[in-house]
Image (cartoon, rainbow, N blue to C red; front, side):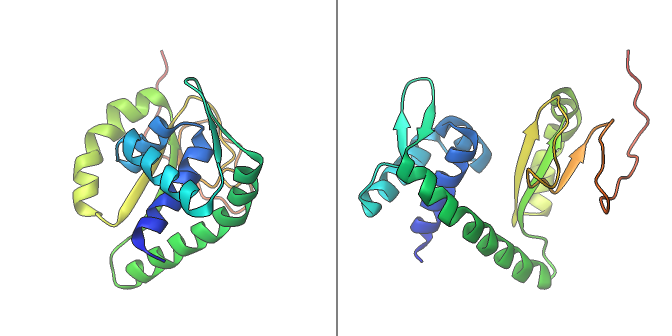
Length: 166
């Protein structure tokens, strides 16, 4: 598979997950125009429309829904294989999905992003800033930072710092 095909699939999958080229672009650290171009190239290669586009939202077509169902698990498998190979060479790699509160993320995590990316260039952060509980396993998160989570069996929790609410 050519690298541009891999990038096009990633743009398609991320756009489908978040319902927006702009948000997918933000998470992939590329421009919305680049995401749109990759998706358009994928649609041209497949000969089918994957999204209905409007100024307000992006909706999967029936063909897009079928295609997403067929490729998303395989795509994740490829990402994990690449990450496992890289980590077996001593370098952490792959997609890191973390959910955290908006204010905490802005104040404490975003300022560390530059240094994190310098130290771990093979990791692609997929950070979700939201003030709600998430289903860690069901939504495919690797970690969450917050309080009051109902943890399923086998999930490990660690106290990072005391939380003082005002």
